[in-house]
Image (cartoon, rainbow, N blue to C red):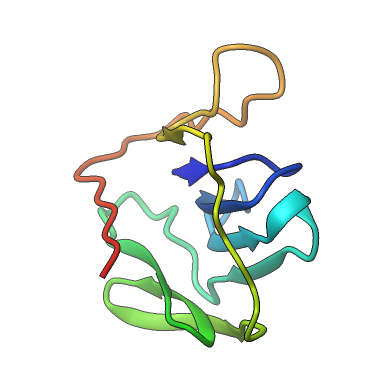
Length: 114
């Protein structure tokens, strides 16, 4: 799930490791610079359903797996994540080349601004 691209402001939740399926949270500020990546310490590629969430506060980015924090990073005080004009995408950012398709099962996707 993502909003924005690597060359723009962006936030996303993705699976990085094809073998272990370690999820990560990624945020980028305006212009796609200074990415902050928080990778989970545990994988989710075990055949079971998992709840995976990225949570941002004013100072911290945290990844949770099954409601347990599995990684975090500090965010700079002036770190702006506003991918204006970009779509929110689930499963792939497009149908063209270089679209980062996810070939698995996804259920109950939520986005919350609280």
